[in-house]
Length: 105
Image (cartoon, rainbow, N blue to C red; front, side, top):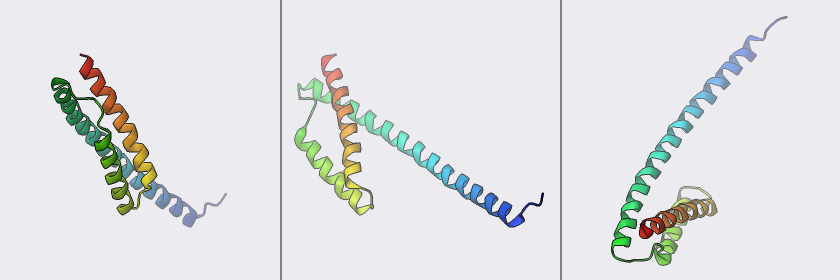
């Protein structure tokens, strides 16, 4: 059976491009995880500060400002603002959960 060299070259170039793109995605994912870890270190400190001063775990006014800010950033970055809002809401819920845990300690 004959092999088509141009097809093999195309397959190899497609595989190489796919690998290159996936390597970039993996690097971005690692950066996102490290950034989230740093963010949660800061929010843990906020939680301890709030608990020490009997402040509520949630701050709805700040959360609304952050959502509006992130929606605008998403729009400017050509990212779906609804996705950015869902992502931030998930993070906010986790932060509040941490703050409640800290306040109970």
